[in-house]
Image (cartoon, rainbow, N blue to C red; front, side, top):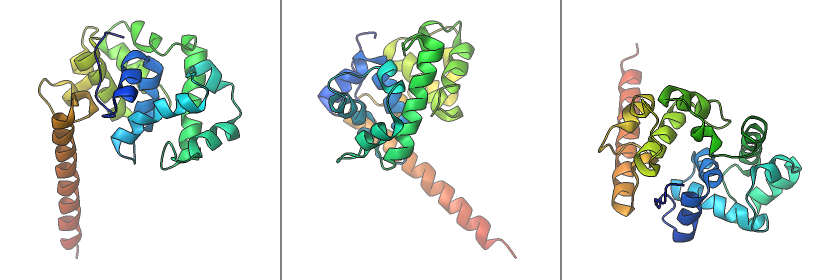
Length: 201
């Protein structure tokens, strides 16, 4: 991509793949839920190895779904929920093949501006509102993909100096800061929920 090296998995080989292969990066983003983010972003490398050294959207889109699920479930499993996440990754691949000629980078290379980029990412399977904004922030902050209005499209995740998401992880220190922020947010949410429950008649 831009020549920048990402540090999301904290594994040099996996991070090299994420940095060089847009498709691997999209897979990592899809898998980044309900498991440690380092595992999510390591999984594209493991998936490539299990597929014989190839990681291509056209290849995965055409696979038998059960076979792909079995590959995801091989120990160590690529996700806590290998079957459902295999389906989600395959859905992603099919959209990439249908809408972008199988080229992941075309998702952002063809975007007219930040709003269009966010729309394109949000339409991908596995990308909700927040994840789409985080990915726009990651592209802009670390990979130099900055169509007009990208920070506005990314929302709070695009703010300089923030420590809110994977878009801000550049090494072990920032990983710890992002993780601390997320822990504080969860603790605050639990405290608010508990206070609300105590206040009920």
